[in-house]
Length: 315
Image 1: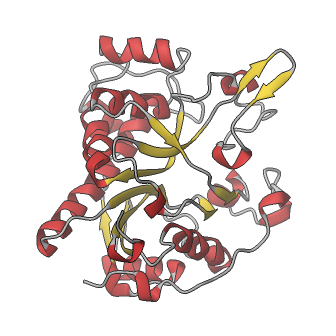
Image 2: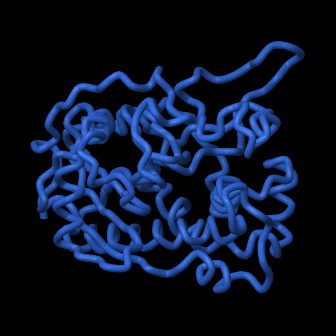
Image 3: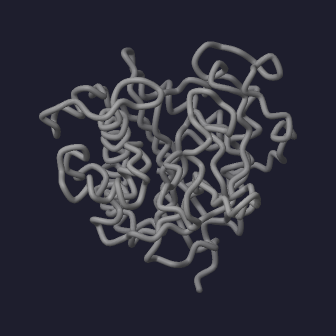
């Protein structure tokens, strides 16, 4: 097995830059990147967003500052295709309603398109360097992860790795993975998502797409496979998968799992991830810290801030 110091990772930071300019969260971001690169792995950061006024040089500096990385190690790109346009390019009809508004197909494809755009830039970087990355990571840029697995420890190239959304209920006993392996984006008791959505088999086919790791051999399945998935509410094979594996729930995470299944990577390796979730209102409406109704005090402890300068690739 190769040493981490001899390996490289491409980190795809995908999504809206809601919180990147807020330096109060930088400790979390830097600790998270450090945890992924444990052992001396090197990384290059690829930021793909959709902004009405996009300045690549400015966003490179913002991302570099947020993650304490050299500007030369950061790439920034704009992908402005709307969710509606992304869905209409594949689907003849509107999709199933999604819990946070719009329809599930649009929510899935707009993220799949950004992720694929990032992957295209990763492939370009590999061609330029004549060297392949060992891992390609897809992560939501507005999620405040604080620590994750050392990428070098994720050695099964047949898998993609992610947290899982579900647990199994046996009588009055909850049989679950340890808490850090689970996704609590939609905690039990939140009225907009019924607690029954957490009740499924473990290991679950219902992965959390906020942070997914692909060993390089599985990266095509994660990035190209998702982009190429036929319209999920019109394609018979995908509809069958949703019914059989996701309890009929038309959620983007289920579509991603269906895409991985089609691409020959049906198994998800569960990974532990710690995170700080200050609340939807922080990300969307400017609420801060303990004033937010979604705040989870257990995740507030600051993480160590070890510089990643020596382990981030330069151009």
